[in-house]
Image (cartoon, rainbow, N blue to C red; front, side, top):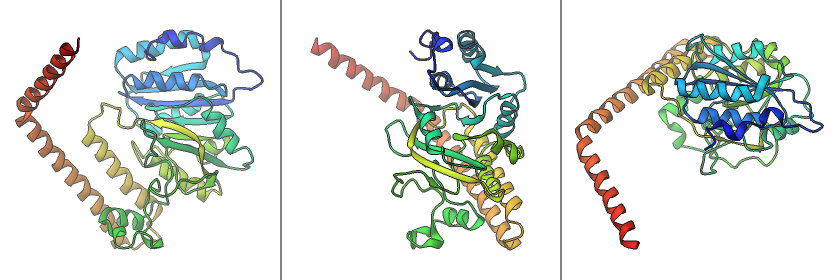
Length: 337
């Protein structure tokens, strides 16, 4: 299995040909599971990668042991930062960036796998860019379909209102009712400027990250990538999306409490609105959108609580059905022998 370090023992001695490794990959992990090892190995196998920095916000000891074993083979190409506790995604990105040695910073989610050549494709797509810029690739599900989040429109209180009330259904093609995630529209065939890319896959020059002082640490989890893109635009930078680099993103691999994650997301979204849109929007509308964000969180909390209660009630029944199905499958296998 790829989780074993045997497959990666030659990583430290692999040559990169004429390429000069200049990319520092920063992976922030919190109870990610076996995917973390796969993600790290996929990054180390990219010839453009100078180093991989894993910021350990908290993980099972078995995976930390595997990382340490892998670091013995990868040498100074793999660094594991531990002991700081769960400081949040934004703060962990900044911590990793402070020790990064590369010309480029590449933020990568711990449940994202880089196919061969993907970082090279990102660098090639941004080769003609000058000034401040950041580029993201096409996030795909394990089944190959495009994932929500890799290309997005601007997030404003109005676009959030359109999403939460679903009034986009009244006129889905109207410019006022454009949706935030754009994965349901035709994917571009070339590199394009875009409003927002996902923090699951962000490649940029070091000077871009430093110019806007990295991630805003007020965001513990979620929305920090949206805030980053907006601040970069305000600083005159460019956000790019390329379909040429496909990154497999498994999503939701962390064992973190789902409702705690939803709470963090709601709070981050409200923080984002009040930080960037207090002046251009009426305060009454900002209060309305903020209330809708928290109402949505409340509904999800209640729905999850009911679902868990029903699961407990039907636990024995489902287990019995599963056992029956397994028994029937085994019987069919025996009958074929």
